[in-house]
Image 1: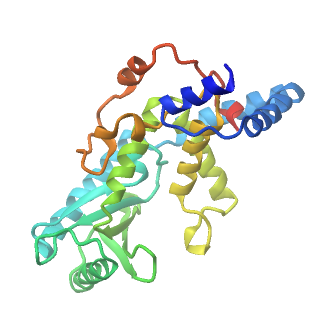
Image 2: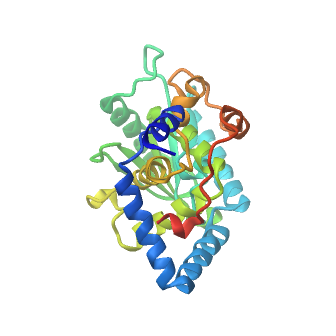
Image 3: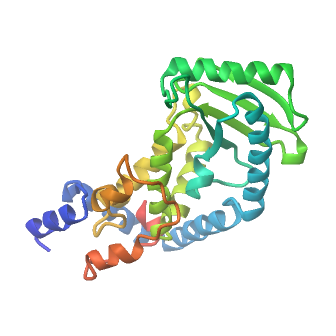
Length: 285
């Protein structure tokens, strides 16, 4: 495939490829390592696969979080009768590990019936929630605090051992997260290599302590975005297309968030003859 064909191919799938020499340098290094140390590369592949299989959040964890969410929702309704608590983050995108925190978004209208996404409204609403917790804390909560100095303020709740000491972060009206979760979930479910790759990257970042955003590091979502970019723009043939470009009616700001829609068939119909990228997870590094 010549350069003009590659550019048309990339445009067809809504991605911008990195320069060929950049991509070649990455995969030449991987292939060189494979030639020198095939056993080590095989061991890395097995460890990544085992980690994803053994430590990815399972149905039991999800049921526990759902139970906790339902009980917190009942408490929230006494404070904000029309509000809804929605689960967001890595549990929704299937990039969560066992015993991980639960992220919730408190979706609440202001006095004009609008979903105010301003920082001041979030601070005020979460302050009300925090004060109510101070006055009458449910038995399921062992401790709580208000982190109002963060870019995105949250009320952090620590549940008791009935919920495996689960930590819960509640933000207010961060509505764009629903669209980003929607998009990431479809990427994760589109190719079986995406979840183990990102889980391994997140574990690596945590071990090196470079994923603590409170301490100046990158947050978890930044690593997810970098991995998706790599799979779209560095790998050739690409592993992930740009769904936002290919299916605008599914992923634009006005689209309903359908977390269950399977786009694989639509993608295959879009170009049944597309070349496939066959590398396994460790050979993508």
